[in-house]
Image (cartoon, rainbow, N blue to C red):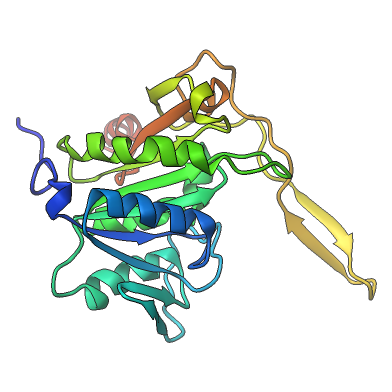
Length: 266
């Protein structure tokens, strides 16, 4: 049986409308870089991004408070909400005359690998685009804390990657998650098509005390990545210094377990 394809087949970027968003906020350096990249791909580029940083917002929606839109310039807006709010407002209101053909989310300052995907606002914006029938690509630049971010690596690889990806037909429920390694572009080992990885250690909760002696908690600590560099996961590719390109599916159903349960409950 023929697989259902994303409407429109390969995308002509020169005629495409591109929406750029992120989760680091409307003033983030990675967003400015992604806008520059998008403008080399298409003359019709719009920006709708969170007013302030929304890292780890995941796919959350603002449903108990009003959303405000602030016009920052020509085709540039900020929203006092989440990345998902931004995509919804852009498609439903700001760009309602012609919805985007492609949503680019990022470029995130820091990787979105393995379990990061489940809480990443960057990935969530691409996820929401895909839910709405629009191609979505999330882009992240891996970096080590207290070290300069190698934005030039993302700038070097992203334009051609987006061109190559959009020349392909995608299944309707697929989004793409790209992670650029923490290396200068000349030292990148290549581009790898990967699967979502799994870490051996995740974030821990740290307790401390404020100046008044009251306890507070901080989520986040150094993590051990991956199971080794020989695998095919996004983590393994990043450790090898490669650009990781991971196709993700909206459908989280585990078919093997579902089949076993049907037999058990029949």
